[in-house]
Length: 399
Image (cartoon, rainbow, N blue to C red; front, top):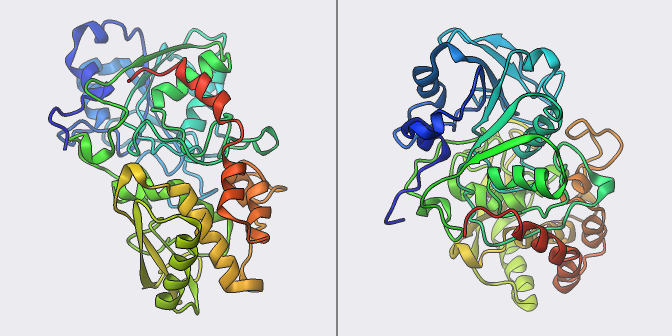
């Protein structure tokens, strides 16, 4: 646990008069259920108390303003909030880009989303689309920064290739990018030259080595299937199973920490996996526990699935992306022709496979199909890392 609690951008804005004076005119607020202070007070209540009638519009990302919507391509509607009496606009509706009507009358847009540090988590895509929409407009974007719950030092996963740009990957960054939301905004502004007016209200006391458990802050799920901060760490890898017919545990209480398939005997499966991992030198920072789980909805609903629960045991040593890719390979080996990569639409892309959009390349899919080696996977993963690390260095806020 951190000796000094992290102070978020929201909390700084609420407590520092100098920052409040920089927020001009009418305000829009992009937020969700995890947009809280350290005492669980909602950001909407705090900002309405602070700015009164200047807070004129609210915006919600994927999963909804109240974080109640489960999944891919399940849209939320626009409405007037019954308590706050302010319009709520969905940026995961008939549009993912704010419209002229939505932005009308706004002088400052506050962005206060709890991200989880993985490229495919769409809140950074929502930020990027907002930034692009505000180019040439007299709207200032202010990001109220929050911790990256999986720390800010380790990068993992392939850098997005241009052909696989989508709503689950708009910037050429690795899957686990180790940036905060504010730093992602600066990457778009300074590296990719998105010419909008952007300011970051940075945190106090956050260090790049911190995982969520070190921040002293309460965890409120930022989307329905990440009830634990540990799940944010495993998610950087297990999200790939969304592109397969292997269950990632949706419909259970520990989604994205488990993976399984009907008919697998979990104890022998786990032993075979760990033997393969040991032979290739993948043994540090985690353990796999054999499990049987019963999804109550989505993939394999009502069927017992045998598989494993991924338990990080040493966070800085845990390669989440690598462990899940290797698990995917072992599911392919175990299931043979039963194993499938999904071909159904994924995040409004209808012609490319979900697994390739998630990985940002088709090379990993081909690696799985040929049951490739860990060393081959690492060569695929690390292409372009040096360029990204150089670009990243230029926009880091925290050290």
